[in-house]
Amino acid sequence: MTTILDRRAPARSTGTAGSRAGWSVQSVGEWLRSPVAPYYLALVSASVLTGLGLVMVLSASSVGSYRDNGSSYTVFLDQLLFGAVGIALAVVGSRLPVSLWKRLAWPGIFLALALQVAVFTPLGIEFQGNRNSLSVAGFSLQPAEFGKVALIVFGAVVLAAKRRVIHKPVHAAVPLIFPFGLLLLGLVLQGRDLGTGLILLAVMAGLLWAAGLPARWFVGLGTVGGIGVAILAAGSANRMQRIEAWIGGICDNPQVEGCFQKVHAEYALADGGWWGLGLGESREKWGLLPEPHNDFILAIIGEELGLPGSLAVLGLFAVLAYSCFRVVTQAEDGFTRLAAGGLLVWFMGQAVLNIGSVIGMLPIIGVPLPLVSSGGSALIAALIGVGLLLALARSLPGADAALRGRTGTLRRTLAAVPGRAAPGAGGRRRTSRPTRGRRPPGGRR
Image 1 (cartoon, helix red, strand yellow):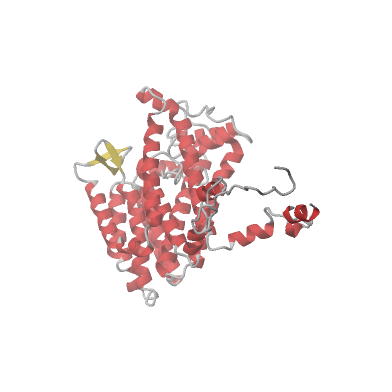
Image 2: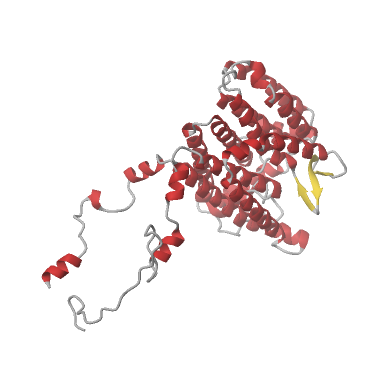
C-alpha cells in the first residue's frame, strides 16, 4: 500500500522561488524578447483601445444623439457597425501574407487617388468647412483615411526596392513624393483638411527616415514643410484664430473668441479630478463641449474615468508604439521594417496631435484619436492598419512558427473533458476500460 501511494503521489514543490510557477521579472522579460511578443502586444492594445472607444462613444454621444435623433444609441450603433466591419477587415488583413500586401501597393495608391478626386465631384459633401467626404449609399466615406494605409504600403514597397540608392535625392523622392505623395497631399489640402495633411506629411517623412535618407535632407524638407503649413494656416481665419488663442494664452474663459472648445475641454479634465465623476456622469457632454465623442473624446474619458482612465489610454498607445518599434528592429525584410515604421508614425503622430489639442499643448487641429474617437472611416482605416501590423508581426523570424505551435484555448479546454484526447496525442481517443475481476488500488470492489 505504501509503495502504491508513493508511486501515485505528486511531487511536492521544494518551496524555492525558482520552482514556483507564476509571473516574475525574469519571465516577463523573456516573454517580451520572444518573437511573438510584438504580435500579442499589438493585438491586445488595439483591442482594448477599440473596446474602450466603443464604450466612451456611447457615453459621450448619448445626449447629443438623443437630441438629434430621438435615441441615445444612434451614434453608438453606427460606430459598432463600423467597428465590426473594421475588425473583420483587420482579421483578414492579419492573415494575408506580406507578399500579397506588397502586390496591393500600386492598386491601392491609384484607388486612394481616385477616391480623393471623387470628393470634388457631385458625390463629395462638405462638412464644417472641409470637403473631404463622399456620400455612398447613405453613409459618408473619408477617402483620406484609407489614403494613409495606401501611402504606407506604397511607400514601403518603393523605398525597400531603392534601399541601395536611397542616399540619392532623386531616388528617394520618386515616386513616393513626386508624384504620388504630393498628389494625395494636394488633394487633401484642396479640401481644406489640414490635420489629415499633416499626418500624410509625417508618414512620408517617417518612411524616408526609416529607409535611411541622410539626416541633412530633413533640414530642407522640414523647412519647406513648415513654410507650407504656415501659408495654409495664414490663409484661413479659423485656423489663425485657433493658433492665436493657443499662442497668446488668452483663453481664460470660454467667451473669448476661439477659446470655447479649448476651455470646455479643460473644464472636463478638471471636473474629472483624480478619480473621475464615474462612467456616464459627464457634465460637459450636455451640450457644452463640441464634438465630445469625436476629436475631444479624451476630455470625456478624463472627466468620467479620471486620471487612471487618461493614463490607461496613454499606456495603451505606448504599448502599441512599442510593438511597432519591435517589428522595426526585428524585421529582416525591408518592406516589413518600413511599413511598421510608417504605422508607428501614423498612430503615434495622430495620437499626439489629438491629445495635445485636448490638453492645450497644441492648437486645435481637428484629428480623431485613433481607434477611440467616433467616425466610421477613421475607425475602419485604423483597424486595417492594425491588421497590417499583425501581418508584419507574424512575418518576424520565428513568430509564425511559434504562433502555429501554440495550443488554442478551445483545444486545452476539450482536452480536460473525459474521453477527449489530450493536445498532441495524435488525435487518439482515450477510453476507460472496465476493470473486470481486478481490485482497484488502495480500495475495495
